[in-house]
Image 1 (cartoon, one colour):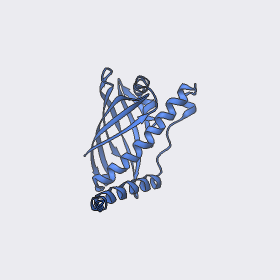
Image 2 (cartoon, rainbow, N blue to C red; image 1 turned 45 degrees about the horizontal axis):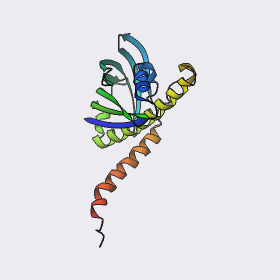
Image 3 (cartoon, one colour; image 1 turned 135 degrees about the vertical axis):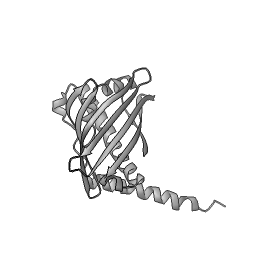
Image 4 (tube, rainbow, N blue to C red; image 1 turned 90 degrees about the vertical axis):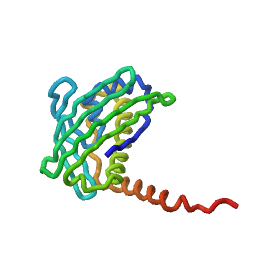
Amino acid sequence: MLITNDFEVGQPVDRVWAFFEDIPQVAACLPGAELTDEVGPDAYQGKVAIRMGPVKLQFTGTATIKERDDAAKRLVVDAAGADEKGRGQAAMLLTAALSPAGAGTRVAVTQDLQLSGAAAQYGRGMVGDVTAVLMKDFSRNLHDRMTALQQGRSADEIGSAAPASGLSVGLAALRLALARVFRRFFLPYRPSPS
């Protein structure tokens, strides 16, 4: 399934791009992600924990930078992993493209996501909503981390993003789903002004 999100960071595009070149720093901004080893140039092993409703999945796998276009400010990451308890697999081709947005940066993210096992039981809407919530958390963590590093704090002092709470992610995803249903069923029936 193809999922698209975008967000803005209140930092200049060149500064955000320089930050994106440091993959361990970027991974530290994603709730539930942990890099465990660098296994080659632009290749990493790691874990990602995600809770979707009552199911908590812990994927272990690899991520490889397939493309890094400095001129276009575009990054392509190929990631794949399997749930540690054997309940499924995930593969994703993620593309992030940066562009100026006023004094800040717009980050457009496209994820071509393939799920099997327990995670595949959720529909596109639920997976998209959970992804939107995680991207919002990621953008806030990215901005906060960049600001802290610019203030002279070390990466060790800052630490990694806390894993997303299953309850808060579930509630936020439910809000998005309800808003989508409301727009679909109620907004088209607004009476026209007389």
